Image (cartoon, rainbow, N blue to C red):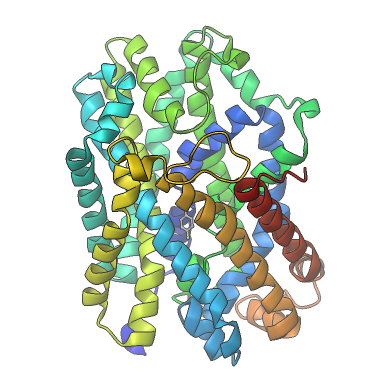
Length: 465
Ligand code: PFF
């Protein structure tokens, strides 16, 4: 077992797990959801869900991983519940699917570094054409996947941890510099106000349920990524405080991303941010609206624009690394394939599965208009479909099953015992009672409901809320 490797320190684990959490979901997804979900009201719900509901799920995943020192499938076997290893299998499938399209988007972001650096702001109007240049953007995606695979092939402490320890601080510094700059722009205050002042009348069922879905994805929960990372954590570490720091880092970066993007939106809309003239949601926010902002900025535009996309790529890389590590750990542990070989095999395979997501953006008619859900007016692309299946449906399902399993099958006292290792004052604390309650009832119920609502609403057009 000595060959399995592990994080060299608690900080290394926290950096890597925070790196997994901080990704496109924070810098691209979060502001886009805030824009669509009515500003500050969404932010408030998101914060509540991260700490109240998602944090207990994170603690559970890390505890299962550290207890068993196994990948998500092996973990259920090691605890003696082979029948439950389907939950790990769902997780590994989710990892495959998510990485397959996540890498495509990361490839776009990577390509945009060069577009911005050469002041090609006209790309804003040509985003659709850009996505259709499949050999070019496919090449960017390939580079991204190779860098991801190379990092994972170097192992836990020598690759994943080392990369995260450099990329995460670099990301935060770049972000702060860009935020500082965005605050100097005209009408930045109007953007910030839209972002930070909650309008409680906007909170409804849909905002709540989008906020929970976003929180869950953003914290990398539900597919066993943190079971896998947890399996490399030392028995000396305090799981609870590590999880708290990871959550704080993730939420912190999402909040900072908003503080960067909304002032920019305030600037470009001349203070009329809520008027719907500019895309403030979806992929267009980052790839269409922001380049227009960078163009308006003037002489600094190329630097700020390129800097922004470098930042986005740094965030994406620590996430793609974790997405790849999950199936790799499975193949290494369960199939006995050597790490290096496993990494390149799995990465190559996932890149291939991503091809329909790559070409389904205008290039291939079939994959662009891949499926029309029942009750929907227009078709969804392959990329959108995989997103709905994996991110929106399988992650909440996986999360629901993991917490249910921990509380009711593996049993709470076993979970408590693992959480007490490295944290002797846990047993009998208020936190223990709180976590027990949420893990046993609130989290499985809320996640189960989200799963059902998503499946009914997305695929069948039945909107219960
Ligand atoms: N948390 C990542 C993001 O916000 O972009 C995405 C992600 C990574 C989800 C790893 C799930 C995962 F296991």
